Image (cartoon, rainbow, N blue to C red; front, top):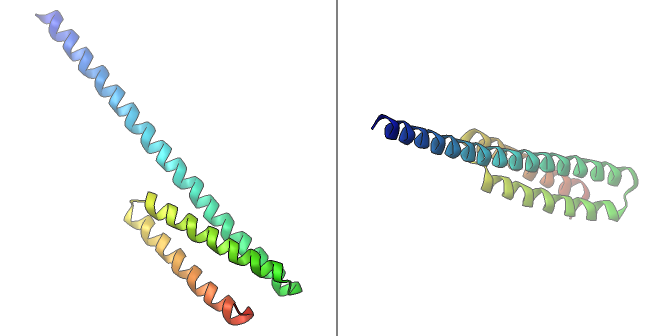
Length: 114
């Protein structure tokens, strides 16, 4: 009886450890994806700044076109992040970034048109 109980407790412990490890792996994978998407969002913002400055320096239409592409990439990545993130604080920060992007785009249109 004691041996059977010991084996049962051992099996339950192993099952619990396996479940915890799988859960941890899911959390790590999700966190890694969110971090990667956040980095891509940051890069798209930097790219937009670069193209805007280049347009202001030389007035080339190619940089306005690049700005439009950059904005679409930003909006797509922002939507991806919004779908992944569940933390209310992170969602609030993402909303603030999106609002700032909208204001910046409006200001850019006021300066350069389009």
